[in-house]
Length: 381
Ligand code: SF4
Image (cartoon, rainbow, N blue to C red; front, top):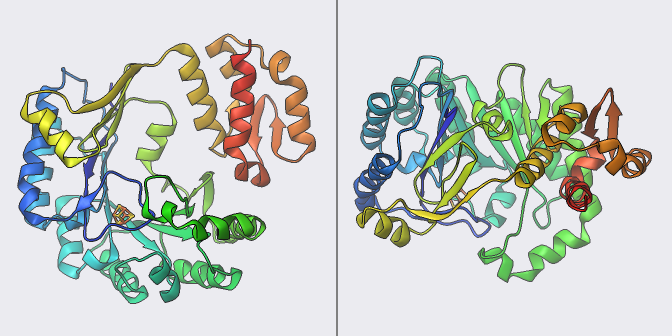
């Protein structure tokens, strides 16, 4: 049973140098063709139970590159095809420069209840280094337009850890984010991934390597500041006022089934996991020859499910329920992890409380490493 539906809109005005998503330069002539391809992908799927969809999420790319008329076609198609209930959370990612009053009102009319705005920073210098297309004023105006359109549920993306950013820049950003009254904040450290233009500019990675302590301090300041403002951290990078957690996130991290449509979209359905082609030509070519556009597909075995559960739950502040984990995967964690957990606890990286293991703040900075060590110990059984 599918709990969340993801629609990937790959178009971006300009490709940011740090971006590793499946994106392409916006070309309005491609909008209609892409919509037809996504509909075809959906038609080629085997029958799926879509009666319990809690979240519909337009992500990208930049979905706000689609004109309202085109977006209306998408929404009408979804209402007809998926038969979405009134409780479903409709979300869309947008870039500040696209959010005019008309566009924001149009999104509200279409039924979008939640907007995720790619603000990243309110510092002009920071936006320039990240080569973003918008200005701080564009972001402020976009937030005002969204609120005036009656949409209160607003996520703002905050990026930190880019070269020459200082603590005072981050503090100024946090104050500016607070002024926007978002219901949710996603705070990401700039990640320099292979296959991105930034990767070919070693000075970016060198700056991060030389400033590890500063970046860790930034993260701690973000967590502390947001907690003081009433934003509850529910995952390493995600913070929400009570009742405003992203349903899409919760479905994905809860291991429930979700369906992704479009270039580079991922799906998990009844232990089958697949990812679509990331490039326009490959995605289109597969569909034009009546094939599902899958780049890979696999059936998750128990070990993969176990590792995935470990990784996804440790990233969340609620942590891992050890007894549930033991009974689901038939392992005795105290026998396998016993002394390692004591070490992690003594090092202040995990908290152990009534059969629940949670990462502490310093532990969250090392989440990937801790998960890898614990998963490797299970693999040696
Ligand atoms: S706008 Fe977002 S999705 Fe598009 S290139 Fe930039 S970071 Fe990537």
